[in-house]
Image (tube, rainbow, N blue to C red):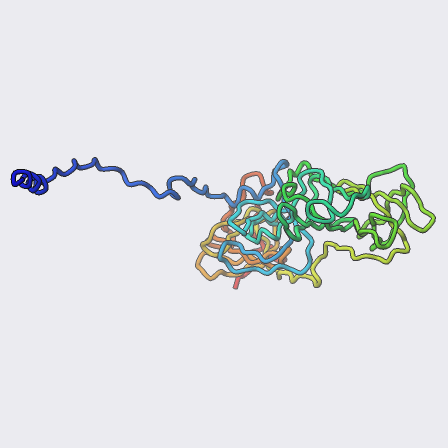
Length: 365
């Protein structure tokens, strides 16, 4: 027993050999840095010149910024959309190209200010998922039509169409996009028909049934004529309206009280204008701020409001826009030597800057 006990004690006190050291390994990069692709820088100037096949989007002017974190520029009243091009996206913000006759530049704004685009032939439903009872009287939107998003429920989105007729309803979110090929744009204009036409007043309501309680399909807005399919003796007509954007089939009565038609509107009051004091050459580069990134350029011989900038070698250049006057920065040692950044061939040849009346550069305060 003593021998056995001694053996056990000896075994417990005998040192255990340490494991051999492991070969050094390279540090493992964090999953974010290792697995996610790097964000490629976006050139803000090249996309400003539109190509025939570039996709287009539509923006309802709202609050914008020339650069993220920059001073906000409030949107005008009214909701008439501008045709724009999407350049970049960052979360709920989107960068779009503004293409005016006298200037091209980019701005940042909320994604929600972009109109949606219907990407396939689509029936408009009265409730999410369809429903509302079967009816042969329907509204069909054609691909490429722009609509406003109003609400979302599961996989369905409530939209509003504004045109010769205005209407609201639900379509699958999967049938909506953000842009559409420029060479496939849908145009309005009522389609010719051998049927007899019926002239209606703005506010006339097209319904699913020939009675005042019938569900509303659409309201005449700026359109006046529909096709007559059949005339009833009680003052109701079965009608069809068709153009390049939609088709509506329903019933209308001139005795029916008018409905509310939504319209695209311009600002309530005229936007302020710049007090131009010089014309700058085509291609003059526009920056978000003195020393900041370029965000656009002038197109043609443009009258601007020019003033000395807050930094040496920089000038304040104000131009008229759909948001009213916007002031950009232009760099150069003097008015005659402002930098240009327009891509070659995208703007008319530059001419020397000159005063509006004297033919010489103005005295800039």
